[in-house]
Image 1: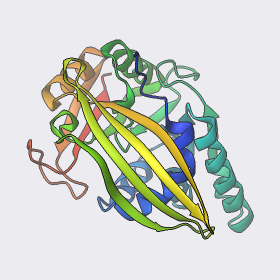
Image 2: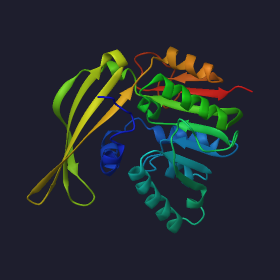
Image 3: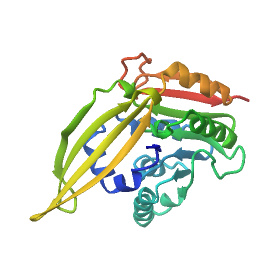
Length: 262
């Protein structure tokens, strides 16, 4: 079966914030907030999802455009932005949300000073042609000398395969009880890792199961750096955590800070 990295995200939207509230201990929001607030101009976030990064940046005064392919993810982000506008006049107006394909960004050349690709969004590009189209598109909308920051989940193809493992349990804000049961498998020839997700949602005496797959592709840092260079970027830094630790292959996260060549 032909796999695409954007499938599954509409189904994931209703569970995304619940899961990440329990698993995201990497402290990425302050890192991206610092990058964005030091930007002299407009910021573009790729794969903005439910607004997990966009909203804190807007609260910090950043003028930001967020794009995502998933209509369901964006719908949740829109509700959060509207709530921010009601609560803190002016801040929510700094955020513009657009449904778009990151391989062909719908903006005029050199519009943005900074582009962010947090939380491994580029790993949803399962073919090299998709990745290169995205990098070229990002370079096109960045001002000369503009910053491109991205992070990657390290060595996803090396994750151990397992089947039907209970990953987490807990209650939602709406009172339902959720259980995430996960299977991980690999397509090693294509360097793909497939996460088969089963969310079991219990309300009262009724249990409903929601199933979908998420597919990711990871390149080693040297290969990603070569593709960035080919697309017109120079590498400023490669980091191994959100506090600025130097990168090595054992790092918890891989962060690349690049700059569009002048």
